[in-house]
Amino acid sequence: TMDGANVEMHEMVGDNNMFLFGLRAEQVMDYYQHGGYHARDIYNGDSRVKEVLDQLVNPGPICCHGAEFETIFHSLLDNNDEFFVLKDFASYVETHVEIDRAYRNRQEWLKKSIINIGHSGKFSSDNTISRYAAEIWNISPVRL
Image 1 (spheres, rainbow, N blue to C red):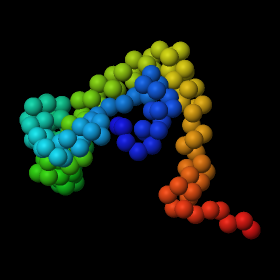
Image 2 (image 1 turned 180 degrees about the vertical axis):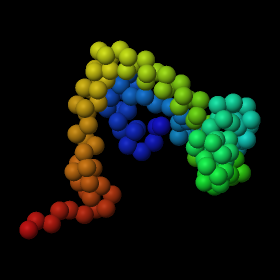
Image 3 (image 1 turned 60 degrees about the horizontal axis):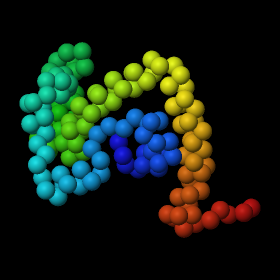
């Protein structure tokens, strides 16, 4: 999704070399400001979402007793899915179809991989910590 470091990664590698899904920040803000998001509508309207969520609370291959994941189930439905997980579900599934297609095209996948690897240095832990230290924490290295 387009938040955090993913925004910077996207700027570096572009649409063709990154798989994005879900709501954009401005869409999320619109829901927060104006409402209109109802997780239960998605649960009741998308059989895939209903099947996944029901597996969280019904005994079966994921849930042995019906209580292990009740907190997640109720958080998504009773608390109206504050992180829009259910809203992003269909986009997530569609994006995985696109990923599968790209992966089956060896040349395309290798090209995407090389481009991403080539731009990954900016996101190394050393670089990230140095940038945070200078730009956010306003501290500098101590020379011994």
